[in-house]
Length: 89
Image (cartoon, rainbow, N blue to C red; front, top):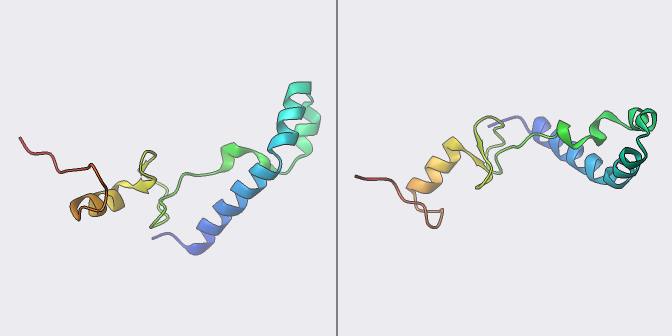
């Protein structure tokens, strides 16, 4: 599990990106790159990281389910994800 500080930092980045989204779109439409450069770094949505909703892990994130591969496997094997079954052939 990742440290709580990393999870909180990512939440803060998402909030900042949402706050400046309209202003960024307006500056981009005007092609005012000097104005864009004056915005905070975290105002860019590119700086956010997809993290597991349960463990906070950032690597091997499954976008469809919102969890990491390790958490996904645990949940799938215990039957907590509807429609997901273990393959057998």
